[in-house]
Image (cartoon, rainbow, N blue to C red):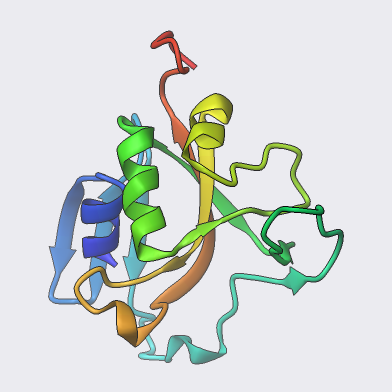
Length: 147
């Protein structure tokens, strides 16, 4: 999880304790904490997504709508984060929202993009570690002014 946030989203890792807890900085005064369940329960039965087939926009890739929870995080370099996420194949468009970034330029115009699969960049073939929708936001607009 730490490698995903660090290498893909450029989010600094504040602490990472023996694979049992990871704290990631995801914006000014904002962190995400991932921790092993205190009872040692496995995550297989935990779902952070609720995928539903809805509308399909002609000429665009088809994505399922997610009605599960999502988090919004901020990154300093949206364009680079988008490229790295796209290279990993983890960019996602949630059709239930009006802002839909199907490509890099749309993500810059909308000051955001989404991803849902957290993968290990060092072991992509292992598949998602966790599915949790992220709205990845820029702290600046296309012209460089604050968002």
